[in-house]
Length: 215
Image 1 (cartoon, rainbow, N blue to C red):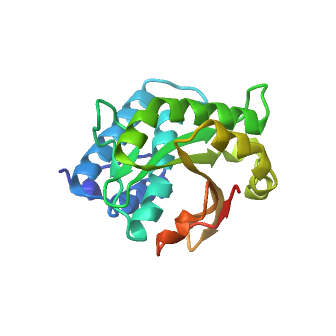
Image 2 (image 1 turned 30 degrees about the vertical axis):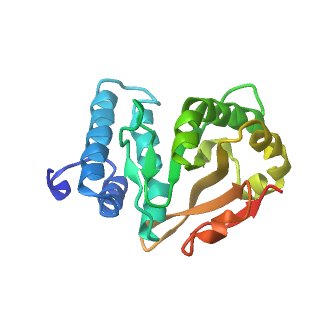
């Protein structure tokens, strides 16, 4: 594996430093796959010059954030580990946790719940076979792009809007919302809020997120 200290993942020095720090919470195999994904996205971005030129790289970077928080708290999520012919964003075979990511961006004519529900349903349909076969707890992490103006408090207020999502998708265990919060000592902090199917998140001694149950 290449020494990540010698690699420039992003021209943004703060993001570059953040990526290098996040990598330390993952196994060597995951680090290799993560490095390849972010560098490929960087190369693709360099071929374009518009406001969305680094969108792919930003999406991948955000995939790393909730997984790194979980691994920091004792989980062992692996990035794009092949399973049954697919490559989910994150899998932890020990705790039986599976995590997929979605970025909620500005634009679109549908409401916030409708767009998020549609994306979650697509992911549930794609991975439900793997979830059932392996008894995974399936989580979809939803990043709230700052340009949308959505707040975590609004997600709390919308909790009942997602009840039908759990009813319609038996493979879904939790929805994890997150976005940028404040900068402390030059480092970006994030705010998280989780909606869970039931209270079994309490079985994880180091579950790090504020969580409400849908029932």
